[in-house]
Length: 401
Image (tube, rainbow, N blue to C red; front, side):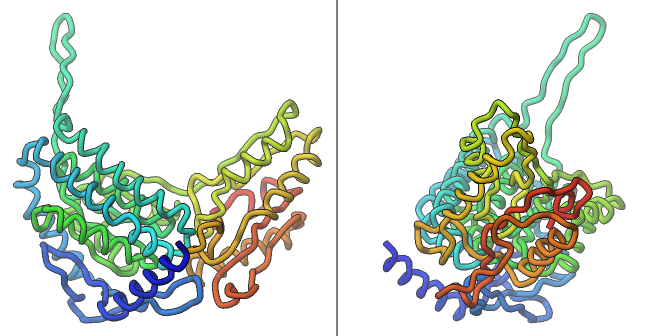
């Protein structure tokens, strides 16, 4: 299996180097209007994966216009037909799940053992919303004694979808599939650190038979393409997964055109362990909840643990012992559970975050350092890190990375 993975990865690297990733706009794969590109590197060893079209305001505007032009026909299509097309996309995702998982691991550093499941989950997302498509417009009648109340559901128009770099393929399907099922068209802006599977997903949707303009994908930087998307008057709603600060910016940028928003933002989710809990069992749940495989960021990670003093020592001992055993290494080796942080910028952010914990007086029990052993020496690998005696006002207790 490892030999097969390595052979396929080599083929993928050669393909991405040979074929720059382009935008999909109005059914055509196009370069940026200014012909500029940016380099996409792998966090595993800082090697270059390939070039990606660097989107501009013009590219975004053209994609939004294409989504607007395609909206009427797509919205008028029967729910049954949309269900058929979304199931066809799910079939294609399942057929290409192995390649999707390998591309995701190469591009983001996430372990292949988890990415194979993420690809299948992406197909499941399409199937779930496909089956919702025929009833997406069903309203609700609520008769009262003196009057009748009723609701009407209709697709809002083109939707902008902005997705993050942690589990990007699955999270893209999570946002795109329901928009399509409801009869909305989409302009997708993926994170610049993980463009590869976004392009692959767009290709699979196109090949499954989506009419041109229904799905558009524009690559680039958040401060240019992302901002252009959130400010474009043709986009009626924004679906976004990412950090809270960016969410605030999107609300401000979309306020002028009264955009609706659907956000999943970051947090500092706690686990609370009471004194009647089994310390070892609770420690295992805490490790599982921390999602340490997610490249240094996961909005659902239980990154804080509040433990009753009576069992604190037993809990911490078990937590550290379990964390030491988590396999960290090259993501395409299926026994590994932790890969590299997704980029140099995020790596530096995590290391500064760890340093702030030390500076503010938290006690470092484990990790806090880069793993440079063997084949990991050129990548952004950080050992599992645990602090204790953390106060609520410390940076590591209250802020996102």
